Image (cartoon, rainbow, N blue to C red; front, side):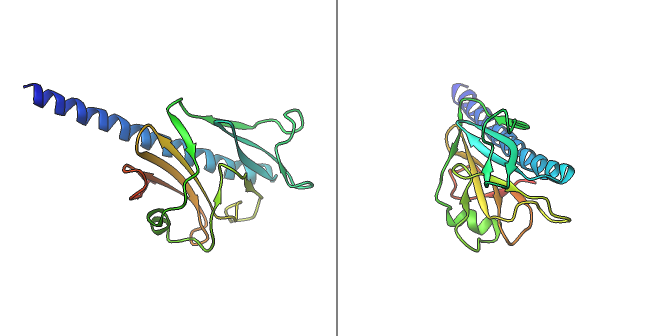
Length: 170
């Protein structure tokens, strides 16, 4: 009976962790979709920048190519902050992630280090650059938002094995 009970607890723990990873990828993709929609609604350039452990959506200053600046000049429009056991990581883009999204034309930007810039365009995704943002959840579960040239939209992906394999999460 003890062995069966232990197996049940292990499966339940794994299910909870998988559900948290799915929740994280949904929050990430929703945040990027909101930024894209808000850019079109306002007809204004916006950017997402990682500040410490929080994603911030701010107005993009096209005059000096600066995302944000002082808080009084560029207020934060939206924020996304995860729990303590989530962390943004800078992974090298594994071949498994590249294959899952259909490949990259060049090395994608690491959005933990550079801002994601949204410039309003009619009928197109407001960001043209290829990039990757990965969040690590607890142990080996990863959630990613990816933009590549092959698809003109953000793709949300999830990995349950530390990035060895990726699954599309729509």
